[in-house]
Length: 612
Image (cartoon, rainbow, N blue to C red; front, top):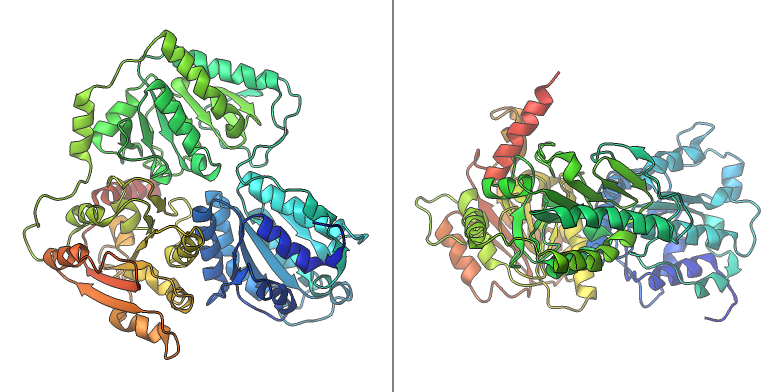
């Protein structure tokens, strides 16, 4: 691109396109309207338009997870940006790269401290909201406070934040005052490419000595430091490889951040290159093929099936790739493995036993372990697990039922295995916090499926907004992918307006609504008969025509199923299997029934909550 002066918001639009963004989420407000003009008039950017800012942030979350890159949400100053913060916090917790752009009053209005609408009637009103976002952002650019303003200062600030968001896989915040929208800036920065979403920071010199002798469960660094030198990297790789070479029963456990940082393919090369078994955590589900001959199952501490727990906890070398040890991801911290045999590759640090090596990025270390492990195996082959383990793990998985269950109720112990038969290669499967996210843990998904859940942050209602983002990203990929959502009747009530946006944008997801008469996950933890776990029941069969209104012509259809035979007949219907309309399927399930994994976790959670 030739160097010229262009409006700042045109620069912004070009940068977003360079990052692969095609859909932009958000809600208009008077402080961002002229900014949105540049988005709307760009032929390659689609303004999605959401029902509210919370849903917009959820949609951006889902979009980033499926696209594998940056997502953008635009809100207005104060009232709009605060509405989005729950979703932005979820992106921080779960390491999702979302850029939050806030349109604000002009620099002149802010400097004069005028009492404007959307302010708090306090002397610090204009600084308050960005400060609220600060702990939820890896990087911020407050353009109204940048001084002096040259032809490149604002663009450099924007680029800095986008770079941080991409390299850290965390949300960032950019405030754009109204007078910056049309301000002319140099386009020269557009000739400098930003890092790929999965690229590692540059290398700098560093001392190879471990910074401290800490337990391997120490938290990840919150901010990345300088990348390690070649000497540090070689030292860490050597230490890990030595431990691996000495082990008789090594395994790999793949977790969330391996996916966030694009390392799943490298993990596959690692395990295939040396023939060792791999396991996944709930947050690492579907990152590798669950039908792979080396796949061992889903490990979540005490909330694992017995054969998986015994195999993982009986290993003598455990490589955790991208570990995220939250309560629901680890069976309430019940991982029973000797810290001395654990190696953890984190986003910006590595733990080898009790030693910690800051800034040894997973993106630097893991690719080097592939040839190192392969060489170690060539010199000393590892023992095979044998057919007995494969048969045991197959027996413990929730496989396709052989026959319809007795009785007329649809229960979780049958339902999730039956749904497994409906899934096909390359499906996107989204599960809401609660029965849905636990129901599929031990159901093997077809190859190339993308499993999307929010196990750490766990905001109920998140999945509906996220589904919008997921299905939009899938459509942009121009692949024949189906998007399938599972959401409870209670969670649906928080965000169901976004189904209207799906209809408006001509999207065809499958929306399975599990009607079990209220908040079942809460009842499993506490208050089985308490009224606070009840909800006002909606008529789900009229939702789609109501949300479509009279103008939207997107084809849609609603269903309700009460018995196993009704569900099987629907799932087996060839026409139903074609994603040619938006479908809402209401599945009636008995109150008090829950997946076995949820029952276990609820007990662990209740015990933890009761501790003094």
